Image 1 (cartoon, rainbow, N blue to C red):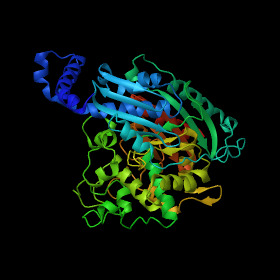
Image 2: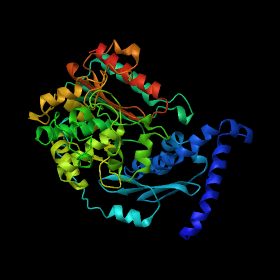
Image 3: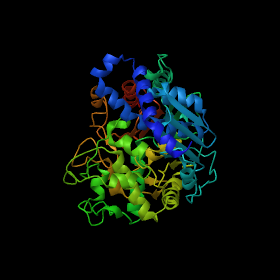
Image 4: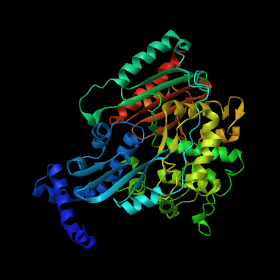
Length: 485
């Protein structure tokens, strides 16, 4: 269709979208008047919904070989209601298009080795430009396939479990992998449960649609992954916690003094409204689903507090950290990809992992890490080991201490890691958990729980819609395992 013709149709299409959304919400004309602000909020959220849907179906479906229709029905649609009643979807082997009655189009394109990238149109020219960005994936050989984890790919050594722990895990897995409702929007959708004790994989289970070789989206666990990449650069002398971040876009501004320590503590003083991956009008959804150059957009946020004084959890701040790491690695997606593959993933035996980039070529360090659960477990074990791996120092001990220690701005958070004292751990379970418990956490209850003093690491991944139930399952299991050596 000619561009001028499409532009002339847009007001009509917006009205159609407005009516469709209203009908889907079950509102009469009179109810719409009294609830106008809610409907306005819904309309504002549609770009986030189409972007979320396209990226979700691409990453969870095309990139890892799952069925896109299954992902759409079980995982994506419940999150973006009532959009499924009026969305238009077109998917191929390499991309997913989603729009709302032809408005707010979003396209997620798949590229081998880097997963999916979101562009904010269905433009073939824009897609071609992004696909033309230079990139070559690393395909490391399978080393020591029969050697026990973590140095190899051997199966879980369940014989190392005590009878008590074996029974606890069996009971917990039955609960976590069994749904008690047919309501898709209330399911916990556990896809992986793994446990390591004393540096040994002792338990591993997946849902019927998953196996060890399928990477899973970590969402905000990627923030901790970004912190680990920064830690490797700290050991390499490229990053210093008490030095300015040095982001090129901040040169000559009032943000040029923000230090790495403050940024990784989620206290740089920048304006941000996180929103928790809700499909709404917050900064997170605007950035992830409507900005092709996410770093530039976040870097332009105003400085509203003295750096280091106010905790403000932000997907955008982790993105900024990764963007500066990209600059330090050489400035391209290929440079930073090669760096974290060579300096972090390869020494740990992590295979096939990646952080999905935005359309500008920057890894989305706050949200889009895709690793096998057994490799997320390796990252947790690295923290439990104090930064050492097979006799080699991957991180400096002082940097690991920074990661797990309370920040000056908030006791419940360290350096890209949550701590036991956060309100995100059920209050009645906190007393049963050791003070040194720390964890990576992501949307829909992705968790890597680390208890260094007890050498226990646990991974839970899935697509939880009953977040309270999934969260309690995770920390009740940790408490039970600790109470029964």
